[in-house]
Length: 575
Image (cartoon, rainbow, N blue to C red):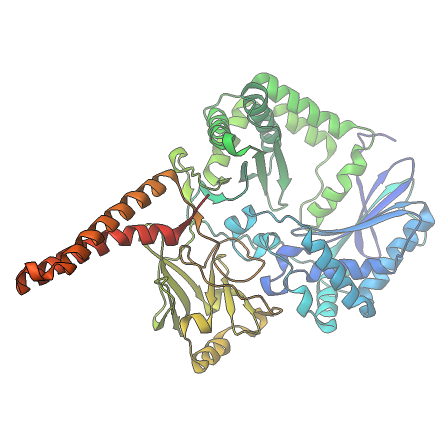
């Protein structure tokens, strides 16, 4: 086998087929242009469910096989001898044409178990919103409500002959191979949406470490930039600073002419400031053009070695299949190597500047990145709908406004400023509904509004009008939930996908300054209350008018001193 040979393009049963001649076991993959980003939030998981059903009849085969659902592509992969490859591909195609619906309930339970141990990334939600490429941030809420007809329709629409590419690595394409798939057309890539009014942007998350991604043009220079960034982060944060153990940077083509560069550095709680500062310093150095020649050459050599390794052609097949499905013909190997050789430090510097303009950074909770020129990603809406206002029955100073266009939550942040979250009916990605009458509206921008009829005193007629205005396809029934008392202090809306009951988080921990303030205000309130009580008891020593004035002043001052202490107690808890 020649590792530098280009991939051969042919077809099988009208399906474009990429072939790489190799020795050893035969490998093959069937790739479809459909993924999570093609779904809606209310029906997330349908592609994954089809993938599981299509593989069920394979059983406990003696050869390796698997399936993978990605953002915009679904892969079926196998390795074995020629007979096993034929059996696998024929079986997958037969199952896609006639899914084993008797397994529907069982596969749903398997997906639920898989979901319970999956750690979903948050960056897609904040960048793209609750739609398209942002859906991988959310649970597979659609799986429980999908019926046989829904699943069949999805398979017949997306898993079709015109929307597939086959790849094979081996001595030949197996004789007798047939791909009996439903007819259908090639589907375009998902639309790229945005939930960020400005970039570079940042948001705070409870997890430690710093995570960043940036959208750049899909070029050889951008691929090398990712490698240079990883080396620079490792040198600064691990080797020199000793702040991080894991420092990585990855490159992922979106197959639409753009790619995502993602970088990460972990941090212990007492090293988060140092890691964040060092991370920003590394980015700034690259943006200033300080590209180490040794880093660039090391990354270039590694990339070239990967392209010419004995199994390089095989490893290129899956990505080349995705390119074909996206309307991008495979790039000849010689051209790829030439593009790598032509990259200079100036090209990498240009990519660093491009990445700086589109960056989205996740920083640890309690930290910010505005000092580094990043804008806080929005967690509120700029407007409130016009409609009927329902004030919360507790003392949280929250309210809901329910109108013909949508629903708005209006509350107060801890600093006293007003916060608003609005979900319009026309931009409602999903509505989670509970048997107790609760509703959670999730907008396509990722903002959520919780509607609790009991808490806000919303009458049945208004709830019925609201339900009638919501898109039926967006409704996702939820199982009964455990009710918990509402705790004032945090608005019940967020950009993060919540998995449980729609209630705010517990109050934040009390800082040292707040503890001191609590003590001071409490002492003042007690002293003034003692004086006021003494004057009350000694009423006979004062004239009636004089006594009334003193009572108003003293008890008023007592209340003014007690109020700040009460607010601190409500908004915080002891560490």
